[in-house]
Image (tube, rainbow, N blue to C red; front, top):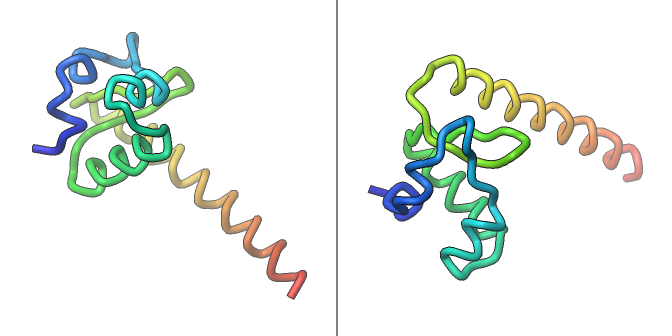
Length: 90
């Protein structure tokens, strides 16, 4: 089991009570970028860690997972547009 999933406080947070990356960073004593990498690794390994404007939470609700997937795809689209714009500078 991934370290981020073992953290009891994190597991107790639902969509209604998410935990933000700064709280996780403080609890683990690491930078927020490390937390984001840990979340990414856990998700990549199949952990159902979702996110919203207020933070992260673990769920088994398929709609919640779909919403997080949709959000991630939207971010990918914006990054692709930024790459296209930068490529015009070359």
